[in-house]
Length: 117
Image 1 (tube, rainbow, N blue to C red):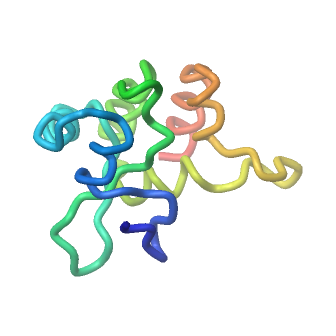
Image 2 (image 1 turned 90 degrees about the vertical axis):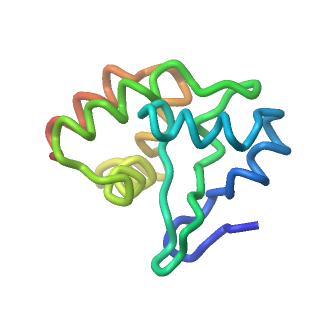
Image 3 (image 1 turned 90 degrees about the horizontal axis):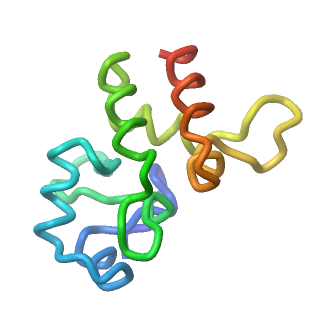
């Protein structure tokens, strides 16, 4: 499993495929289409995917919108991962933008990305 130091909580397509019952080729196609977030460890050629962007084997509805916003703002995949997984504010505790995305609050995530980028 690729729970790397730089991108903890990510899985390569083969592992993700097993967890979500989505074919690895389909996962790669979703990444290329901007419907999934994927990152690479330095020096690696393997894409790794945060598992939280899936719900019942399907990409969460807001993920494509978040990826599109990041691309509009010039935010690369590594920076997007960092923004989504960083604790929110000084009093945010352990809450992250990824948690808001999981809750279906993609409007809030998009607004935060626009402010950050």
